Amino acid sequence: MSTTNPQSDTQPDEGPRRSRWSRRPAEGTPAAAARARRRSKQRRRIGNVAALMAGLVLTGALYSTFAPAQAADEGSESSAEAAGRELYERSCISCHGENLEGVPNRGPSLIGVGEASVYFQVHTGRMPLVRQGAQAPDKPAIFSDEEIDQLMAYVQANGGGPVLPSGDLRDGDLAAGGELFRLNCAQCHNFVGQGGALSSGKYAPSLEDSNDLEIYAAMLSGPENMPVFGDNQITPEEKRAIINYVQTITDMPDPGGAGIGRIGPVSEGLVIWTVAISALLFGIFWMGSKA
Image (cartoon, rainbow, N blue to C red):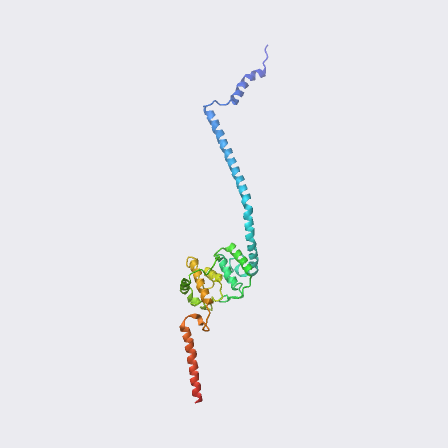
């Protein structure tokens, strides 16, 4: 009677099955091509991940190299802006708002006015405003030049707008400046910058005591009733010519006495005629009363 060995019965079947799963496909067969495509796809994925990691590492290295210098520059700028913020919150925020957006019926927005408007308003003492009126009068400046620069830095950094020029502001053509002034400015400021009355209690101020930057800043910002003369309306060279004309005529002496506005012999003749005729008539009536 024979006995059956279970291990010997299953061994012939397991051997071929194990070798069939572990055998690599032959070259040139569809299975080998599919295997090659899978490996190629895996290599591309690994390559993309490696390139991304290399890019991130390179970006971090460049940022760590250049960021300290940039941070130092921003720190030097923020010191003036921080000081300007303190001045603004102490003297300007009640009328112009927390974010330079203005307060209705109290003060206009400062967004877009730039450092030019800040310089003109603060350097001429018009701001801070003492009380509401038809027009802010000029008076001695409350802030020092350093504080004005700090306010300018804060407003410029947070609101933007026109900036002040540098260099000589009187290097323009004198004759051209006179023509431009008579064409654009004399209607309000008089032919020689002596100023004049406007409507509703307002007036065009005299330019006699204005410095070069104040005149330039006024043309850029257009305070009160004055229109804004941007670089598209009056070029920087023409602005310098106007300043040269204004400062030339205001520095000229009056050897004959009072200038009477320097608008020519009409005003002078009118004054002489009025005074002389009045004195003559007074003399006639006085002598007639004594006769």
